[in-house]
Image (cartoon, rainbow, N blue to C red):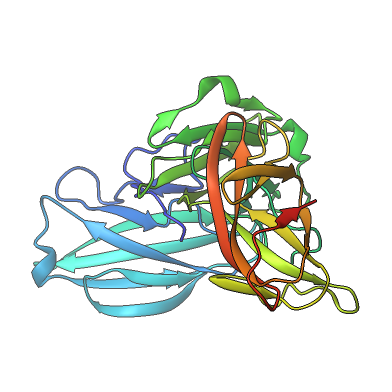
Length: 329
């Protein structure tokens, strides 16, 4: 879910906006202002143009909007969408509001730019996993800005020469902002909270601007146990839970952690058999001995640094006759 910030065009600074608003053409007296949503329009999207005024009764006024010289709306005053073009293109919208026999004019120029934020959680995922890890609790996420700022003639500006201004939860992060600083490392929010990361990007002369934002929501890490079949390999299509029966002379199990923080290195996997530490690593091979049947408990923890943050367990059944001689290698 992306979050866009409100944007107003009254008294805009050229370094802070991707559109410019011009004052009324009728001199002093009643006037209105225009605002645009979203703050940073993207190519081939729509921008909502809204009018507001403290001196004109907009409820009893009419409005005409022309985009690129073509009338697109005529009627009562309410937010109206304008269709935008490719990256770097400028769309000019003219707005005329009539009230009490008088007309008032404003215009706005909207230049689209293509900026996308990509979240790269610093957490674990299995090899060849088709998805990506989630934002880890008590971890970090690298957020990368992919900027495609273009001039009006379509020439792309080198992203390394652009100025990046990063904001996390409405706080500007000065040490991560500057020319060429297209990435930021963000600490995960508290559980059941969210964290908003946004970036404003500008060319060094301030003529081109763009931006984007995203919301980070953490998820609890987890660890899954799978059967490693001698013929079929690791059966990732079915995670084991509850009770597992060892039907042969031995059984190999494979564990993989999902979304465990990796900022301090790869997660440590520790296996426990009947409460006692058995071995570390992704795999464990279980070999019942003797002629009896029995059961045992197998548990697993995934640790990041000094913290154990994900666990899994199985109840094991083995053999044909009661037996207490069971061990893991």
